[in-house]
Length: 464
Image 1 (cartoon, rainbow, N blue to C red):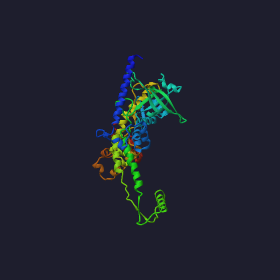
Image 2: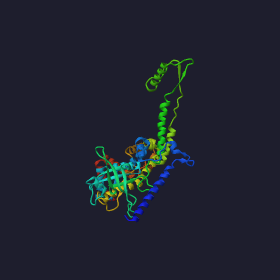
Image 3: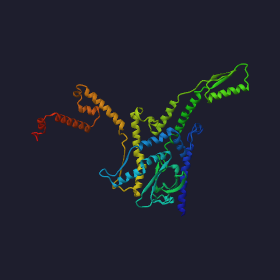
Image 4: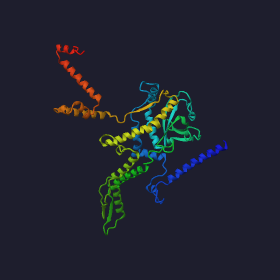
């Protein structure tokens, strides 16, 4: 390597290390106040150096942490996803996508990698293409030609370490991963480590700031609040366990000396009372007074933490705690939630997960190349469910019944106005009602007409 190239590579390495050291120094100053005299993080038990394992453990063991990750992901990928080239006909590209989606259950894979990407700085999708004959072939770029996609495997940051970076400043991938080192589980529960070329990977970061590769873990900003919530909920359970069962204060009668046998017997009874089913104590020379019980309601303290978590994540509190259905969630909460999910679809799920995957499938011939750009159609978030439609129908039927039962109601409010303003029907629906009404009247007239009247009804009019 020429001297200039070595110097340039060394400079890049020094710059990278300087950035790392700078961020480490910033991290070390977290939680300090009063000019560094008070370390709040240390006093409150907050860890400063969080890793993927910290986030993963919190996700697996704490309900609210799991809800923060799962609820937005589940709502984002709910319903059918259609990839459309044109509305005029069913193209080879659309047919290929539908077959691939059905064969590999892609929507479930996208939801899984979305969760994994949120737990750490990024997640990846490993594309199992048919040009790999041996494990070592994965380290090579994808071979040209029409490839077949055999499988798609979502992996977390912990299972997809970045082994090599593209350090060529003239490369369009400068500063991006070149080779990944994947840890893959086999069917016998053993694991293998394999190097994989970036062309076989769809890299899915979390929320990005300066770094184009490593996003922000979704639990990072709320990690302290999750720990506080754990303290309050766990502490309240311990408080109830200890406070609901009164402690006792023993007062020895004046002039009475307890023997070793008395002490052993009293200790035995207290142990049975504490750990068994005994609910009475028999003793002599010692009176036992129950200590005052101290059990307080933790709800206000829990609510404060949930409000903070809701404010940081953008997830309405009722949805975060699992009451997003029925009358428990307000219309405002529902609209806020659906708007957040729609934005998440448009700004994250589609540009960061869906399109990069589809574009790689087009590049490698897994999908036919569309003649024009394709569009992605999501299930309408605001569409009424079957139950909601049934409820709306019942309400409209009841309102219509009351309207027809009131004498002179049609003179005050014409039917068309009632249909539109009170029942919320559209013009097409109102026109259909009129058409059916006229058809029913015509059939009633014809059904009750005599033969001579029927002939008269069928005669052409003078206007014709």
